[in-house]
Length: 110
Image (cartoon, rainbow, N blue to C red):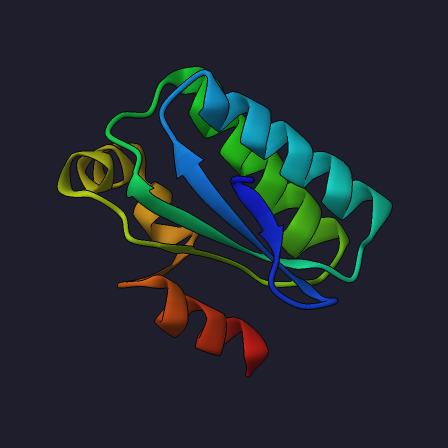
């Protein structure tokens, strides 16, 4: 399953391109709504593009996890093309980024 529980308080979303991307973020939003103690790590290593719908869902997840729930949200494995989208849209300034899953998990555990 692309969304897995790493621990009682951390979810990992292993994202891929649409339509799975949209479905996976929907699952994460639902789980974080039902359990406000969850932090989230999103693995972008298999994502090659983002569209406006993807960005909107990503921002909605950030607003829920970081804003409402006061938990952590980190991204890792961002590919060069997706990183370019983050730079152009200014999203590079509002998310926490890590090179890989182990580093991202360590940041959430601290």
